[in-house]
Length: 217
Image (cartoon, rainbow, N blue to C red; front, side, top):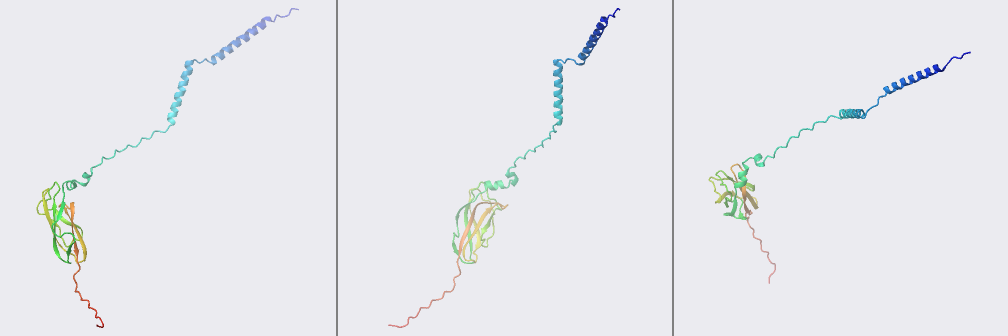
């Protein structure tokens, strides 16, 4: 009996398996492409840029700082106070030279009238104008009134200032002070004083009786 020949069938089956395997390998190779170095670098740069963008968006917006206003320039005090103070402080002067009448501690009785006279000098660089006032500034006024200059006193000139006064009735040492001022009432120079000593009124004296000695020689 003749047996069928099986070798060609096996060969064909093996060929079919190889063809199938080759087809599968080609499919897997196409599904996993090989990445180049340039492609990997490009991908990394893109990822880094996206991270920077997200970080910037998550940060709070900067708040603008307030605008600083420059401090005003200091104004000179002469401007604030006015120019009227400057000549008074710089060019007017008065120097006491001596008392011409009523030296200090001159005895006076209550109610006694007298005139105090001082010798002074204009030691400034400006004249004392008519209208300047020599006025009481403290102590006891002793019934005095303000002396108003009727004519100018030039710088360097000596002049007399006289004030009529009345001694008070209170016993003791009495002091009064006067000073020169501008017509606007701004004082300058030395202040001048008068000092008097008020004595008590003299009373009636009574004789002290002489004691009588008893007995004799």
